Amino acid sequence: MIDQIGNKINLEKEPVRIVSLVPSQTELLFHLGLGDRVVGITKFCIHPNEWFRSKERIGGTKDVKIDKVAQLNPDLIIANKEENTKEDIEALQEIAPVYVSDIFNLEDSLEMITQVAELCNLASKGEEIKSAIRKNFSTIVPFLNKPKVAYLIWKNPYMGVGSDTFIDFVLSDCLQMENVLANQSRYPELNLETIPTLDYLFLSTEPYPFKEKHIEELQSDFPDTKIVLVDGEFFTWYGSRLINAPKYLNGLMKELIDD
Image (cartoon, rainbow, N blue to C red):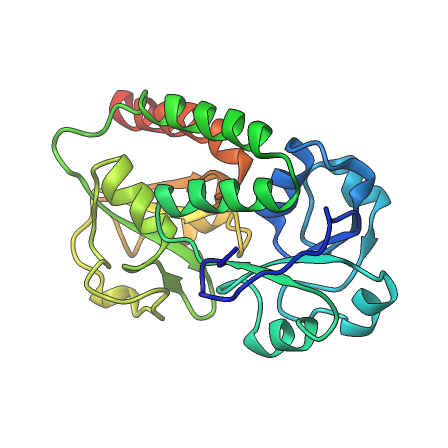
């Protein structure tokens, strides 16, 4: 198999000792039914809770403990180009085959689910998950008037979401909102004074844990903008959590329209 960054994955047999370096893909492995076959996860792999409490943790997504992974003797490692470092991935390739995803939109996510399921000899379960995601995404009712939005992911410095990101895909393609930062790439550092006029400012619960107090702090900078806390997992977790993302997004849109 060729993964999403062009690496060839060779498995001699069905993997039975899997390490996941990506929270959203760890949750996918759970929903694929891999159970005891997953032997290591990161400290950010908080779903499912029972795995978070019981599985061996091998560091964070950006600071993988290579020696810990080696001690687990994995036969497959699941990684992501954006969430993990190139250096860590290259070091881990010396230990076991590393599948690397690279996600920008829904089709990328569905391809990743297909590939991971096939690597684990669970193709039919992968198709079930994909079918549920496609069906539920077809229920999203987008905005009709393309409201202007900016999405913040970090504070000190403030950072937003530009183009070439899965979040931009959700905002622009799924919700039909106008991302005012789409003329910038990836995750630009921001001067709040330069952000164009907005209808909505979304503050994500991750990776920076924005809270209600931050709405109050920012309201003076955006007096005519509706500032909203949004669940970052439904904008960024591109595994099996996508099954429930459309329900959340429709609820969010209804809340904004009714307000």
